[in-house]
Length: 252
Image (tube, rainbow, N blue to C red; front, side, top):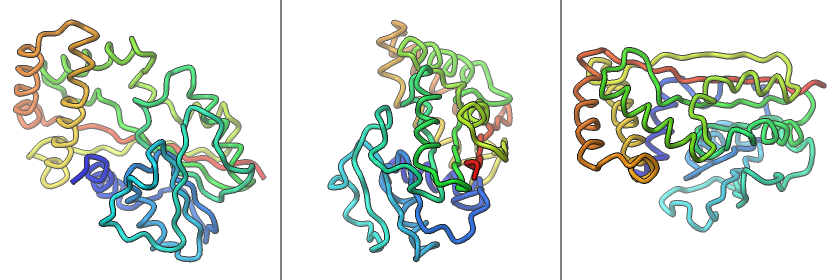
């Protein structure tokens, strides 16, 4: 299973659905950073009379052929750091998640303004993120999070932006903003979701390994020792994280 699909299923389980914003028969939906298109596929089935558009830097030709996308679902290739290739006021609902490692700090507000531009008056924007720092971390987990945060900051990325998306929606001009921090366990102690979350955290730690090693001159053995120890800590410390969700409405 692709890592993006795994993240989709985990978030859907944690949030108990694909959308938290109060949607009422939307006719057009945009997914920013759509990855494999799994969220788009499911939303197209939920809202068969809505046009669902997935937007990502990956070409639509690279999407999994095993997925059968409904006719009301299409994909557009583009760069989230550039002006969105959509007309103003095009969508009733704009969805974005897990871009904290893709957006440099100085680009978050300008990107939020693009979300405003393509949303219809009265429409909703929802942003979902997770932070690499979580609660009740053991020493190895905390070390990994610190390494990843520092390596990211040297590239202009701040993982803690995951916790501040509601302030960006407010700064961009959205109203009726709702901000939620949904807790979820990490580790076998938390049952099925906890086991999935532990796998997800380990996947992020492994994916960030090359960047940490090159940016901070950490030895491979040192990093791998922390990685192995962190997996044991999730249960002994009963670690848990938060999923951060902010949604707001474009003024009519």
